[in-house]
Length: 384
Image (cartoon, rainbow, N blue to C red):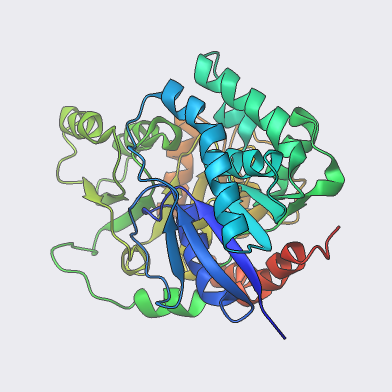
């Protein structure tokens, strides 16, 4: 039987959650489809199969002016439509906002491939600011997303947000959690680490150093924990690095809080730490929480509108969001967004009282073999 041609469109494969998911899809779907990876920027931080074709729609400047980015969308859409026609693409799967806009413009211009887009965050939170970027982004989502053949949300909270706040037909939005290569995670977690002393109680976190991840709150809370024989390891890069370095210095935490940069194997840190901490203001589906659980780590996380509650408290109501106090769950502790006192209490509880050892069991629900079946169902149109 002839395999269908699948185009996976994403901005780049720089280190990030959506990019990691694409790297797994490329590996797991190559036996089912003839795949072309279409990028908008020439940056690849993840291993991908040698058999995968790579096409660059453009080589975008990541610091390009926002107005220029907006004006280029229809032209990139036309360019992508021609690429799909020339290469007889049967199915297009786009990840993240800008590639999704491009994919939908390609459909407007006549791309006949089955057009699927994947929303990776909660748009009403991501674009909840009263500025031009937020207003334009929300308008684009409302006008373009409904034209997709199917929208994949990576968390139930995201799906509800798209239906309730952006007017997308609920029959065209499906929730599929991110896939994880649990065997690979466990293997990589065994790698050794030099120059870090793990005899102290160790909190670890992973995420881009930006406003949304709220490392500032995390560091402020850590500074006020009464237990002093502790350390906080922060993995990731981003525009706020210099400000965080200044914050660490001003709080005299140079020997307790460490900015370690990006590492494509965070699991070696997870397996040697005591707890994972996450202070994000909004999420789609935070991969790092599942990855931490897979390494046996309990998790302290803010109760974002989408993501953490589904992972840490799967039997609770997904639409509920904590506003005060902390909530102890089977796999960790949830705290309200941007609440320092509750985060201090949760981190202290982890040091002094946490005892459960069953975290890895929860991660099994997100094994790539389970999730791939759901992706294939959507790609083939079986979920409609």
